[in-house]
Length: 176
Image (cartoon, rainbow, N blue to C red):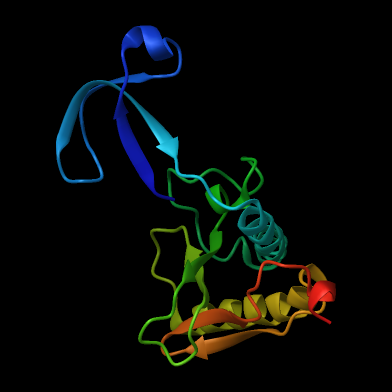
């Protein structure tokens, strides 16, 4: 998510600003003093679409943890499975999907899927392939449930997995 740096007087923000010696701002300059980071605005329908996508990613993460979570030791600074409010931040796996406009891709726009391992141990290619295939199978089954009436697919786009298809923000029943 894009962040912007703003200078604010201490009297403007009091408890909301964080004192930092210096931080880089998004234009490459350096700001000093009191700053506050502000999220850019996003369309509510995008937020809802991504909330539903994140929910199925977290469900699959939980299932992978139950089946494969003991396969490797956690990274020493990674909390145990279920220790945080978001499964991206705990346990052995981190499953994310990030939007791409798809410039230069064979498939076009979509959400690039990342299945990461939070361990210092080397992950074998066989384990990686097995876990990745299990995650893909589970996600393919959940996409129609989370996005009924949409033609979404989870396919290879070069070296990455991508959720592609009907990414429109209106309800599927409105298009029928």
